[in-house]
Length: 519
Image 1 (cartoon, rainbow, N blue to C red):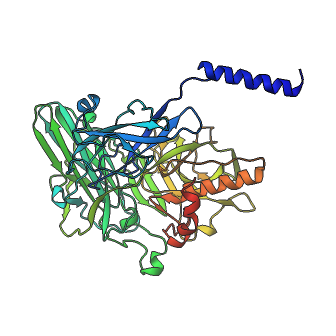
Image 2 (tube, helix red, strand yellow):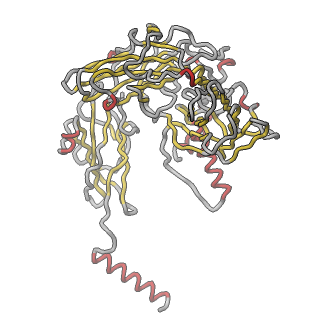
Image 3 (cartoon, rainbow, N blue to C red):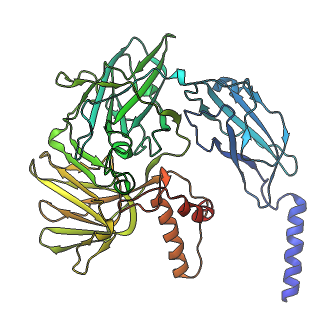
C-alpha cells in the first residue's frame, strides 16, 4: 500500500466512524471552579452586588459557552430543588464567564447564599447543573460591630513578647451555625477549644492601619459544643507596631510606625439548634498575659520562642488563668474594618535541604536548593534550656558560612529554647524570611534528615500558566520568574522578601503585573 492509498483509507475510515456516531464519545460541557468576588466560598463578602465567575470545562477542543443560567438560593434545599429564591437569571445568551454582577434580591449583613449554574454550548446543548458553591455576606454596616479592641496594657517595645488572650463561655445546646469575625492591629492567630482556626498566616496582613484594617471570617460550627467552650488568640506586633523597612529613614522611627499597642478584635455569632442566638465579643471580660513562649516576634528580625513557657490548655475551657490580667480596652481606634478581598497567605509547598555542611565546628549550613520565602520547621531534641539558633541568608561567603551583609538591618534570626521533651518541633508564628541557606547552631549532635524542612508560603494565588521548552536556560529563567513572584506576594506585592525593606513599591509591580497575571 502506497502513502496516498493509506491516507485515503484512513480518511474513509474516520468519515465512516463519524457518520455512524462511533467516532468519539459525546462531548460534555460543564461549569466548574465557581467563585464569588474571585474567592472560593468566601464567608465575608462586603460588595452588595458581588461578581460571580466560573470556568468552562469540556473534553473536546473548540467547545465554547453560548449561554448560562444562574440560581442563587437561601438554602441548599431550595437550590437542590432548582429554586433560586434570591436570583434566577433564566437563560442568558452570553459567553461571559467572569464579573457576572449579582442582580437578585438585596443582600444584607450575614446573608448566606448558595448557588449553581448551567451553561449551553455552541450547539445550544445544555450542561448538567454545576456543583453548588456558596458565599456569605460579611458585617457590611459599621453598626454590625459590637466588639471592642483589646490587648495588653504594656506598650510594645524592642524584643517584646507576644500577647495571649482568652475567654471562656457556655452554650446551652447544640450549635446550628457559628461564625467568628476577627482582626488585629498587628498579626494574630485565633483558637477555639484547643484548635487553631484555618491555615492563614500573618493575618490580617499589611494595610495602612490609619485608614483601614482587614478582618477575616471563620466557620467554627463544628468546633463548638454544648457546655463549656473557650476562645483564644495570639497577638504579635506585625507591621503595626514592629519594624517596617526604611521606616527609620522616612519617619525617624525603627518601630511603632502606626502604634505601640497591638490590639485584637473578635465577634463570635452563634445560632443554637433551639433557635437561640448568642454573641461573644472582645471586651473587658477577656484575660491577657505576656508570659507565654513567644518572647519576641518581628517581621524583619525573626522570632524568639521558649518552649519552657508553654501553657498547655490555655485555649481550652477549664484552664487556670487566675494570674492573667484583665484585657485593656482601646476606645480611640479609628481604623475602618473591611473584609479581606484577596486569598490569604498560607503554606503552598515544603522543601527538603539538598545538602548540609559544617564550615565551622558546631555550625551547620543547610542548602535548601532554592531561594524561597517562608520559614523552616525545626525538629530537634535536647535538654531543657538548650537553645537552637536559625539564621537565614541568600548567599554563602567564601568560607562556606552564610553571607548577610545584603540584609542590612534585618536579622532574619529565629531562636528556639527547648523544654526537654523527647522530640520537639518548632515553627515561628509572626515573621518570615527570604533565603536559600539556613545556619543552625546549638544542635545537640549532628543534624538528621528531618531536622529542617522549608515551609514556602505566599498569598494563595492559583497558578494559571506554565512554560517549558527545549532550552534548559529558558526553563530556568521561567522558574526564576515564578519563584520571584511567589516570594514577593505576601499580602501586598513587595519589592524584596529578605532585607530591611519589603515594601510595596508601585513602580516595581507596575512593570511586572502584566507578566504576573498570566502566571
